[in-house]
Amino acid sequence: MTSQLKTILILLLLLIPALLYNLGDRPVYKIQEVRIAETAREMVVSGDWLVPRYNGELRLQKPPLPYWLTALSYKVFGVNATAVRLPAVIFGMLSAALMFAWLRREAGTSVAINSILVLAASYIGIRYFRSGEADAVLMLFICAACTLGYQMQQYGKDKHYQWLFGLALGLGFLSKGPAALAIPLLTLLVSSLCSREPKKFLANFSLPGLILLMIGAGAWYAWIFWQLPDAANLFFGRQLDQTFISGTHAKPAWWYLAHLFEFFAPWGFLLIPAGWWSYRQFKLNSLPPYARFAWLWLGVVFVLLTLTINKQMQYALLLAPPMAVVIGHYLAFADGVFAKINKVLFVIIVLGALALLAYALYKGATVLALLAILLFPLLPRWLWKTEAPGYATLLVAAITLFAYLYSEDYVSKEPRKVAAQTLMALVGPGQPLYQLRIETRPDDGALSFYAGRVVAPVTVEQLPTLLQQTPELWLVAEEAAHLPAAKIELLAEADDLKLYKIQSKHD
Image (cartoon, rainbow, N blue to C red; front, side):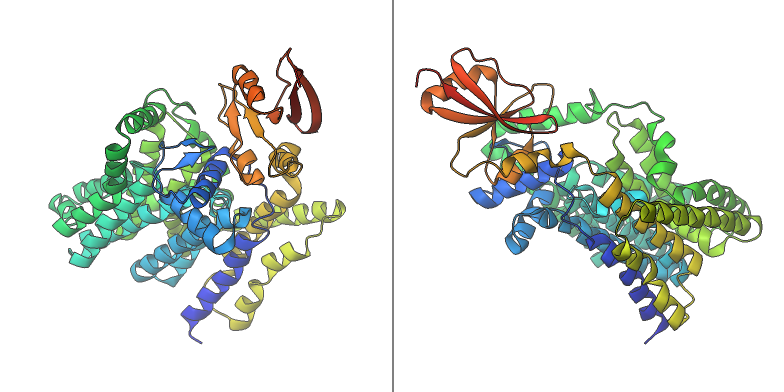
């Protein structure tokens, strides 16, 4: 067995079990994940894969590729939480494989391995590689476009790379919109300008590549505008306003900077010494091209995220690939005082992990499976005596995965996260069931997902009309609706959600 194959197997022994461990145990709760899970479920049930619907209502705010991927997962594995998250696992691993292949050729195995461990075994990496959201899908296509563009700018244009570059941009846009175009194109443009060869930017494009870009990015939108012009204008205009103008998740400009170390823990703390060391290397003209490109890529993403009105944690995942390259390069080559800084930080992390383990055992947590994830990859690393990954880097990655999975199992469980699942288990398939719409909040798609049918949102004003059509209905709400002409009975409650039976007094 070659040294390279041994190294890859060690990576897989660490990452695959960590990504798949209890993947379906966590409830489908977070709104971004719920929207994809329920929209995909309604696609499968209705057979209409072109017009997304959420709780029975049109949902055109986001492109459909993540819905399609989740619907395909349902077709293979059934409608369940594991199937919701498998596309993210697959696309996260594909991103890691793509980055590994690119960096191994550009920088060698050590940098490639370090970068993959930083990418997948950081808090934000493991968080979104195990979540049924669209961000891991988007990240793959941005990575593909950036690395393909880098290859063409460094080594000359290649028609196959040009085609793949256009396809990556198009599919990225179909995953989550304009970021898939803005990040690679601006990064490559800035890179070509910094190298004082702006014409290299044009080497990324060809007519077949542009055609693939337009088909991937525009075919579905063109079909929607043709079939549903009024709805398309309303939804797409609303999405542009919420993202770039009004902002439904508006945060101050410095928000990402304030959370950078937290999101990319534990590796984020290395960004400061890595930046200092890279600057010194740059001044000595010894910073390699791929590392310069990674810093430019990181800067472009950071500026774009800072300028965008909406700011959420999942958007910061787009910082992960270039940050992984920057830190992976630093870990492989830093020496002198920087190597000493790394050792101190690693010792602190190991001591923290031992404290966490002692706490878990004190609380009586069953951690044997998690400990296997932590320790098992270290055994072949010791037996095979491979040069990469280094023991320290592998150990820190394993500790990070252990800490995240432990917190997911024992620390972050809250009653409100299982409220929809708990209540929907009490409802029969033929019972008329609705949820009370609250104008200031999005409708709860988790109710529909766990009920296996659309739990339509209604207002209090609509309930008397519904009671004329059926003598009894069930309603999920936070508080009972005020209906003088109806009898209201509380059937069950879970955290802040309550299940009511409502009957007309005239029956």
